[in-house]
Image 1 (cartoon, helix red, strand yellow):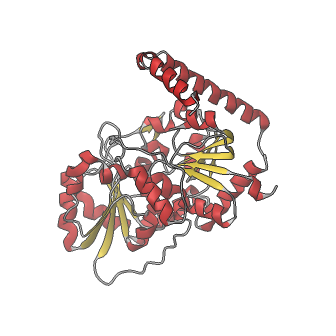
Image 2: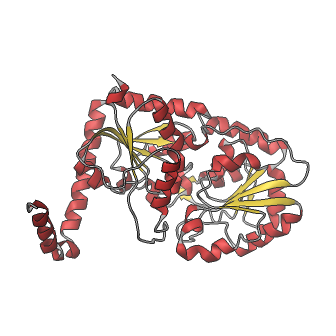
Image 3: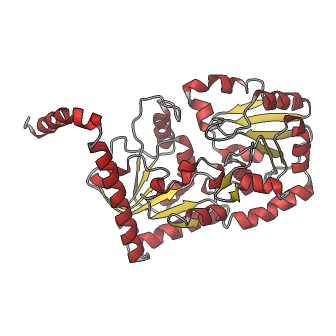
Length: 395
């Protein structure tokens, strides 16, 4: 099949989603595969993102030579739709002809995420799920066929750091910090302890997306004012990982960027045991198994950091990396392109796709029924009728 006949649509509505797939987008361009990128226009400030985050995503794409669609695409035929969350799925599917629906994970370790990330209702939209690592591919296969393609955002990353003459560099990668959703290490006690360690280490931090941009996060952002270097969420992890001698994280999926990037890892502030079914979350299991040093006690920070820097501990993490990440570097893009070419050539199980399509149709019907039975839908019916009439009226 001529590659020019294939068309891909990316739905991207946040910085972390863009960074997860930017190397793949560039690989499509390199292979002359036509694609569209839909970045919605958002003006509302939410607890999840700033009002202008999608505009920043669009700006970043334009700086890289890509010009995204800002209006919802209509009347197009796409072989593959990639997205990290359902979002505009009902609208996109209704207005366009899409053959295959694919979820790409921007994170590793689903077991450290809130339940919504692996809720069946969120995954019914997809035919396939692309995962960064083997444990996630196994976990998500409980929902739909899942494939490990490696940590694509590190596809062009290479570790070549030599031991510094002066202070070693700690890169702190904390998660957001909503205690009801995820246990975060961002606390005054931990930050104060890290500041005391500045005498021995150069302390840097890359903030979580929500901490970095959300309006109501000023206080948490302020905790990092005295760090030696502060990166916001728009900084790709691939650009700064090589500058670190050790990564300190918590239940953040960014912890596994360190493992994939050959940087020693230590974990702080993991909270009480977290289970997916009866299985302990991966972060806490690795601490329990002695592969990653970790603690809930800020006073043990220096101890776990030095332990992570030891050759014995790093050797264990390197062994785990081989089991966890099937592909690395350019192999990630090769695995991605192989998966995509299989879809282009329809090398799929027809019965499987038929069932997934039926599941997606039922999901759409359930959502539509819920909307149409809602009070707001009934109240606004006259306005919708007027809007349709005005659109049909000749000018």
